[in-house]
Length: 398
Image 1 (tube, rainbow, N blue to C red):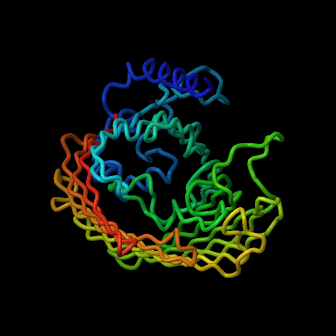
Image 2: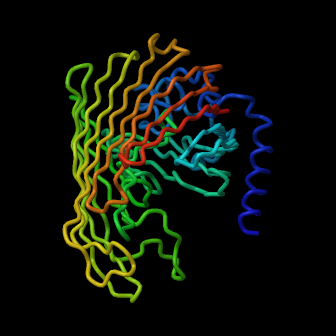
């Protein structure tokens, strides 16, 4: 009943607001610009779009005052038109997860998104999953952002976000196939590079160096306990990243995560697991024509319970993985036809995590905000049981 009430409330809000939203995404609607300005193709961000998001969803040449209600109270920032957008994805799949079945995955994704300025320095962003493969997931990304603290390019984010966002954003990938290396959680560990709660600080320099620091709970998006506490233990996880632009076409970066977590077996015996993740990444870009993204990560778990039945923790469980993604848009931001390829590889002492796939996708833009896709993936994680799967899909934002 609780989920049903959420669904009804969300649907009512959507239809009340969408009447005035017309048929384009919220930021394009607000600034009267094409989605092409920030995306190539939707939802992938161009550098301009990345800068726009990093600037708190504001444009330097568009005065913010016109987007707020004039109430006579200078201390009140009230958005004139509440920004709302939706994303709807549908896929027809064949042999997905080696199911040997065809399936109509409709809706595969349905979510409402909102974001924008609350003042000249404060912004917000969130989205609510009405349906993710048939499940009412609720809120995932949800944060407040303070832009340009102390008058320098220092931003603070407070809320829910993906630990891997400073690397490559999973929510903006083109393929149905995910970036698997960010999702690995060996044994009973709750810690990975996907969603978490905390603070993120980002600092950019004029000479192309970006420095990012995060402090998060380290247990994902767990529900609050009876005491209204989200964190499952007393530990916090620290994350650092440094990246550097080299010339016009290359960016390289380094990443490190360190943290502890309390794990319990079926007998309620506690083990404190030490987690260390580190790695390198690089992006090679050729204007708007081609982009190659590469990621390598190594993870070490020092005191891990592999199952609830374990009495003694396992020592030094190593997991390593890589991701490589190639995106081709032959006509730059004028391209309607585009191509992408993705390689995933995970090799772990905890064998259930082992994963190897190769993916190819061809896409076509019916409209700037309507994308058709044809995708094929070959999963060779188990050489004795390798299998392909395929999908035809449509991705929309409005």
